[in-house]
Amino acid sequence: METGPSGRAEERELFEHREKRCFSYEDGFFIAIFLYFAFQSFYFALRIAPGIFPDETTHFGLAQVFAKHLIPVNSPATYRYGLVTHVPTLYYFLMGRLLALDPFPGSGLIYLRCINVVLGLTGFYFAWRWFRTISRSAAARILFLLLLANTLMYSFLAGAVSYDNLTNLLAVVTLYGLTAYAQNGKVGQFLLFTAALLAGCLSKTSFLPYAFALALAAAAVMITRNRAGKKNKEIHLFRNPFSARSHLLPVVLVVLLLTGNVVLYGGNLIRYHHLVPGAMQILTEDQAMQNRIFARDRITDLYRRGKISWEQAVGMLPLIRNRGDRASAYYGLEISVREKRHPTQRKDRLTYAFIWSKRMLSLIHGIAAHRMMQKEGYALTPYILLWLLLLGRMTRRIRESDLAGWAIPLVLLSAFYILILMQVVNYNSYLKTSSLYTAVQGRYLFPVIVPIYGLMAHYLTDGLPRYVRWGAVLIIGAGMIYAGFPWFLSHAGPEWFIS
Image (cartoon, rainbow, N blue to C red; front, side):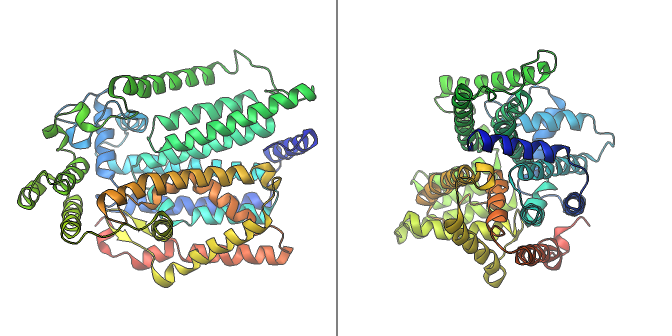
C-alpha cells in the first residue's frame, strides 16, 4: 500500500491530478455506462412486480414501521418482520424518514425503490472514483465499469427496496475513503472512511467481517505513514491539520455512529452474550414464529432434531404466510426425512468450495429472488473461463506495486470475506441442513464485488499490447452487455412485471 517516499509522492500526484483533470473521452465512457446502469436499475424499480425482489416485503414493511415511529419497539405490529431492536436498523431508519416525506401519497413502494436506485448509482460513482485513483490504465478502468454495470443481479438489486443497497454503497465508500487517505493523507478522507465503516456496521451484520478487514488495513496504513513520517519530515499521519470549523460535522457524525455501534453491539454482548441476539432471546416463541424466516427455519430445525413429528411439522407450515417460504420449509423437511432414512456423508470443504463457487456465479450473473433466473450450462461457461483466466494471469503477474500498491491487500480483503461467507457461514449451514444451497445468495458477495472487479479489470488487461488490450475490453464488455439486461428481457415472462 506504501512504496517509499518517492512512490508515495508519485501516487499522490496521480491521485490529485485525476481529481482535478478536465473532461476526457474516459469521462464520456463513464457517463454512457453510468446512464446505462441507471436505465437498467430504474427499469427494474418501475417494472418488477411486488413480491419478487429478495425480501422486499419485509424491508418495505420495516420502512413503514420506522416512518410511523422514530424509534420503534417490538410489538404485535412488528413481530412478522422480526426484531426491530438490538439489530442494525440504520437502513430502515433512513428509509422511514424518507418515506415520511413521500411527495406522492400511495406510491410508497415505487418511491422507495427509486431512492434505492439513487443509492446504487451513488455506489457506482464512488466505485469509479475509487478505481481511477489506483489504476493507470484507461482500458482497465473502462472494463471495470462494464463489468460492474452488466452484472445482472447487481443492477437488479439496485431497483429493489433492500438494505443491501445501503450496505453495498457504504462498502465502496469505505474502500474509497481508505484508498484516498492512504494516497493523499487528508483528515477529511480518513473521516469519510471511518464514518462509512461505522455506518455499514449499523446497516447489516454481514458488513462486520468486511469492516474488520478494512480496519486492519487502515491500521497498517497509519502505522506505515507514522514510521515514514519519522524518516521523512514531509510525510505525516495527516497531510493537512485538523480544523474544528471544517471538520466539525464529520467528527460529530463519526462520534454519533461510534456511539451507536457501542450501544448496539456492546449492549448486546453484555446483556445477551452475542453481537446480535437470537429472536427468542427477545421475543416469546409465539411472537417470533410470526416472522416467516424464523418460522421456516424453526420448523425444519425442530423436526431435524426430533422435537416434533412429521405430522406436527406439516401442521405448523400454515404459520408461514409467504408461499415461497412455506414451500422452502417443506423442501427442508423432505431433505430431513431423506437424511433420517439414508444419512449421506457431507462433502469436504474443498469439494464444497467448487460447488459453492459455481452456484455463486450462476446467481450473480443470473437472478436469485422470489423468482429464479439462473445461468447454467453453456450460459455460465464464459464466466467460468473469465475467472480461470483471471486466476492464471494474476498468479503469474501479481506484484506488490500493482494498482498503486493495493493489489495484494485487495486480494486479501476479497479472499477473507469470501472464505468467511463460504466456509464459516454457508458450509456450516450445509453441515447442519445437508442442503448444499442453504443461504447461498449471489448478492451476499456484493460488498467485495468492487475490489474483485478492480483486480479482474487490471489483470485481464495488464501487460497486453495496446490493440490487444482494447480488443479484450471490447470482447469482454460486449459479452457482458449481451448476457446482462438483454438476456433478462429475453427470458422474463409476464409474471415478472407489474401488470
